[in-house]
Image (cartoon, rainbow, N blue to C red; front, side, top):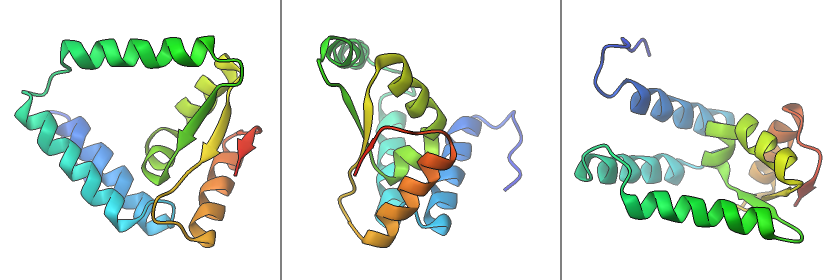
Length: 127
């Protein structure tokens, strides 16, 4: 899809296309595309801004990972499709392992996510 950068929802549409790619690649379930749309709806209702409580929750989550003796980042198909490289970098910076944890589980999909993460440099995977 060719989306002009001037489109008011440019970034959101790019992310949606990335999740749709994940469905085609087998790493994101079809329900993941619905979940992403639900998140977009909440973004719209919140005025396309991050609330103060969300900023605090993010800071608390990061602090918990930094203070953990054995931090683990749990990844589903949407996360892998959208931000695999960022998750791998975060895991490296924190000394954290990456757990593949999918709700609509199939062995094939789990293996596709693992392979996708490994191809991008993930080494400490908990499967």
